[in-house]
Image (tube, rainbow, N blue to C red; front, side, top):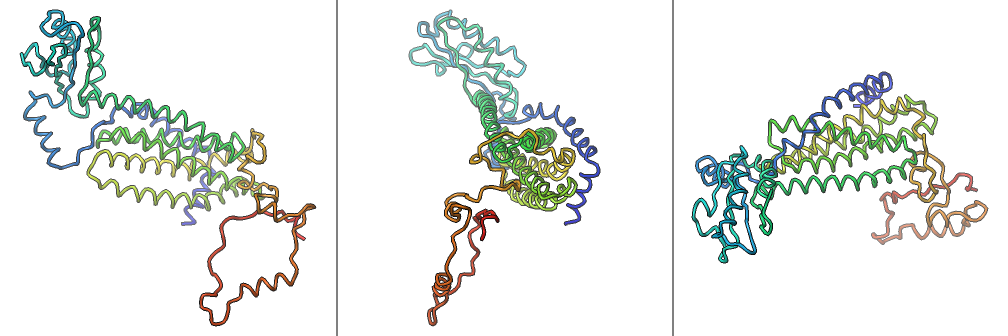
Length: 424
């Protein structure tokens, strides 16, 4: 296993431009498909595969198409007119005729072509019509927006037209979901950048995790576009892939870049620092990614398209980001080298998180322990031999008392950084 990581580091340090070129080529191929990824997603997928309800719905769609299993419901209302008024019927017929011109419409049923009074409210001012679609449940939400615009276009004054139904609901859901996802990303990226600035204090170091996350998402969406033509993928795959992609992309790069900077400050050359980073942090993120992928494969057993899509999206993005972290990132670090700390952003010491993480020296007065461990003049308070012996006597086990034993547990993982100059 160690040889494998050493080989990755050797390839990255000896042929960095070739490694970068391969990833640029993969990105260029995936980008056009990633931009069309949303077109192949379905808003359906909540049915349990092979269940009786799913079989019944499929039978209705194939055997009883005249019932319009996929449809839109157009609701017409006027405060002044009733359905018996010619102007009312003319407005309804005009709206429905515009919809019937669409190739996705199979037929229309309304009060005016059926005479069914149950389609009219008691006061006669509201009626609804069923616009049947000749599309599947997956394609109906894609056809709905154009039909809704056609139905509402050129509505007379004082005449209200609303469109509802399953297809309209999913069309609105997809639109709101996309808008919310974009808003969430606009809020998340600045927050991520702020954390990375505090962690690294350098624009160059900050950019590598962001680059890795964006590249991983683009390639993931391109791959999922291809998979979407083989298996159905829910619209939810975008949300979960993006959420996990940003998280693991930043997380994995943070480990490797931090280890690389530490190695450089400890006197290692750039190739040595890359090798140390891949063999230590690279190994850690490799097993982390493998465990995540193995855990998510269990979700693929669920016979629900939505859950399978979520799991598949997260598996693909973790695999892509992991591969980029172990190959592309070391190659970029080789090319950047000692310029990793370029364009440093001056921050007050209390706000910086990168000092100890990158190997820089920090003040011995860290928190309450640091303040109490040092006296003015940089000397630590000494303890007399008498006090030290009494401490040992207090901790020693008492004869005959089984509860009085030394604790073999590890101490707290919290470490206090103490300057060697302050020691006596």
